[in-house]
Image: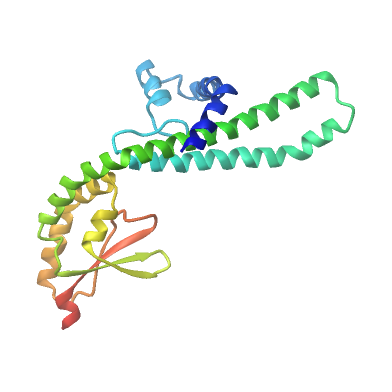
Length: 235
């Protein structure tokens, strides 16, 4: 943690906060021509509050931070790809007696790309620090939802719970593990689906030979929760 904080301080001394302000202004200039036809209030919402690879969503605790880490990774990939593609161009310029304008343009591009990479690293460290700080609060927010979900009769030991990925690989899991591993955002989604789950349970009660119930709950990326009535297995 000490080393990470020291790294942040170094980046700040190098002016990363100023570069971040510049990057946001540049982003706005690029986006604005495409939304000029919209009302000013709507433009402001799109530029300042709509989640994208610059703006983080809010209201879902750690889930928002984890989602934004993916955007940081995406940005880092773009920066690296840009640097790789530009290497032959820059090399060619520097090896052919460039004039002062070409040198300045090349230096400007290299500086911009370098600071873009530093910004992604800076954001990633800050996001990781925020996640660590929020973990106790996240767990506190989760407990009432978990207790509420466990009280629902559909989430009982009458079922075997299996996680299946897109390659059909299966993994046994208990309902307690499902709920404990879930983020606050996922638990809210589970609660919203209770009516659907209740109707599915009612259906399975009336169809004891059913083999499995495929519930598209957000366990993890591209994974599905399968509820299989135990009475169907014992038959």
